Image (tube, rainbow, N blue to C red; front, side, top):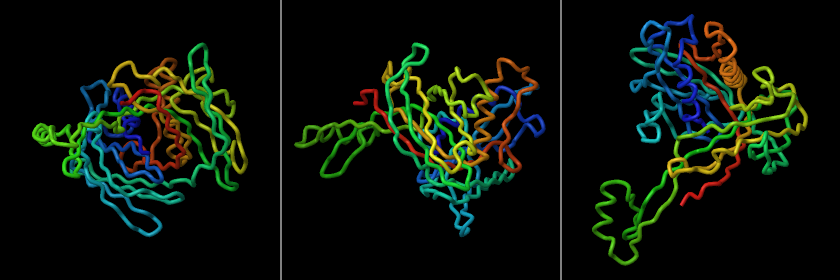
Length: 342
């Protein structure tokens, strides 16, 4: 899953100051994209805009871009289209999408062209499938707070360093209303559907039904680990909550490795209808450049309270002539329902 909503958190934080002091501040294309094996393509595109003279950077949607993804193995390419779905309306970037689903062990090239901001390019390789066994969960607690502990064993392939990232999010859902008339399904939430329903609601067999649909809005959940081999120890104490857990390739390379992490259950159950959703727990193998970008972002946020702003480290990306990251991932995912959705 290319978590567009999750990546928007990077935009929100980065706009506070210029974390790229060596680059022009205006009209730089910004890409924060993760493509995942088996998922449809989603590429967020924005451009940087300086606000005033204080080094603060904001971001603006780019709706005039040409977004092209090609496969290195055979040169086949796909042009992505601007997606104007309401699900992406809260995003600080325009989102370009396509139905194509990337493959494991495959390299992809990205090219984004915009008449005002120029052309940027990037390349990434999606890793092999995540091999994992004995995944189990148990209700637990951490410092008196309830958690869900996830324990599993990774089975790594020899000869290749895989970089693992563990994370958990709550994906919000929206309630959909629909009905059937003469064998055809109609969307009651659209004006034309509601009008038709009022005309036929007393007909035999016509009944207003409800369903829940996953949105592209995600709430990141704090996670914890006691694994001393994770890279998080370089960013903060392992007593701290993290947005992601980072397990470097050399630790696992060519062997079976058992580890665990715990997810804060604070947001598992919604306190209002707008916060209802499902919990996604993910174990991902990611490309090295994506691992490095996300790890340094984790460290950068942890350093905020202890390092003078002028010395904060800006995450290195792989977008040529622009800002951000284009990374690849393979994922195993578990879905948990704690909210009553209907």
